[in-house]
Image (cartoon, rainbow, N blue to C red; front, top):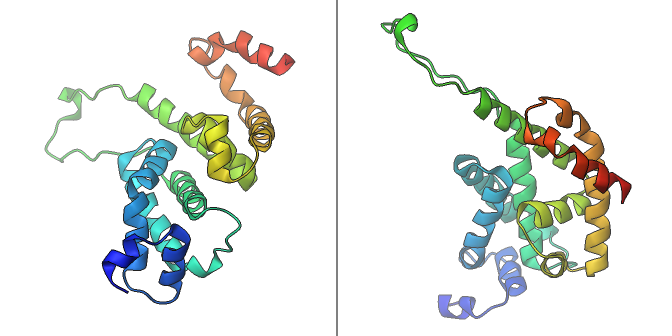
Length: 208
């Protein structure tokens, strides 16, 4: 099938062509959506390097698992799910304390190393949140990631997930409740943090 014809195909038709061994169909499909998929990976990981690796993992998985697509959701939704899952998996595997080795001839007493405690703390918190997200049921995780990480409106998330807005609200509400319970200990880690200062808001949310 000529390349010009491929570009005129729908996403479903491109995926079907890929399954039928067309050597260019998958590339055309991914090129069509690569910017959006990269954005998903970057927003989920908050780390360009991790996002790049996660996206590569996801595309390899999608390439190999194309026959598992059943057509019950849009192709973009199927790809999105794979990218989000790959991104969360990368975050769970990543070490939270990267180390830097100084050359042997450096005198440690004369080397000033910037205080990275805040950075480490932020990274650890992000890892905890990512791990908690990964424990949610898939439908709840997708809703929470779309609304709270990617900034989708409920209406846009409903289109992305191919379900009614009320379903998105319900899934995100259940997911947020589970995350709040799972991550409640983070509120009291440091009395000087903004998390503690927002306790009033958290209590109000809990009383709704």
